[in-house]
Image 1 (spheres, helix red, strand yellow):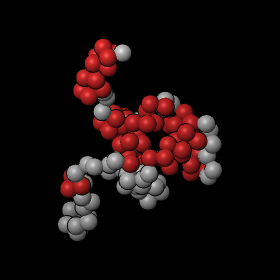
Image 2 (cartoon, helix red, strand yellow; image 1 turned 45 degrees about the vertical axis):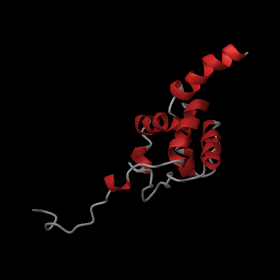
Image 3 (cartoon, helix red, strand yellow; image 1 turned 120 degrees about the vertical axis):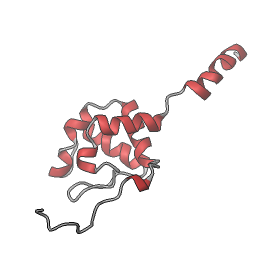
Image 4 (spheres, helix red, strand yellow; image 1 turned 180 degrees about the horizontal axis):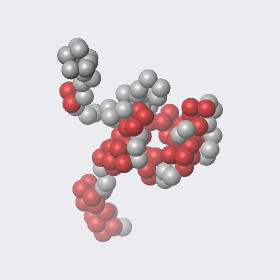
Length: 118
């Protein structure tokens, strides 16, 4: 048993996948940013996902994967969630619930430069 622990410990400490990075990669590769925004802060039609509680997000994604959408808008998520495995849901929800990207990288441009046509 001790040999197994000695063998497994370095793997757990250094070889374990970084769930946050995996979730971030999934967020962009699956196109989540197209509706929920680059910083997961939501858009006019779609809710923010960053900083939401992990159990809430997991529950929602698993319900969508099971083809359970309560509103017409939530039913849009079903095709996206159906393709997700439990590990991918875990990674995505880790990324969103622990969101810690540099906020200075995302600044909406509300300036009034130019007249809109020049």
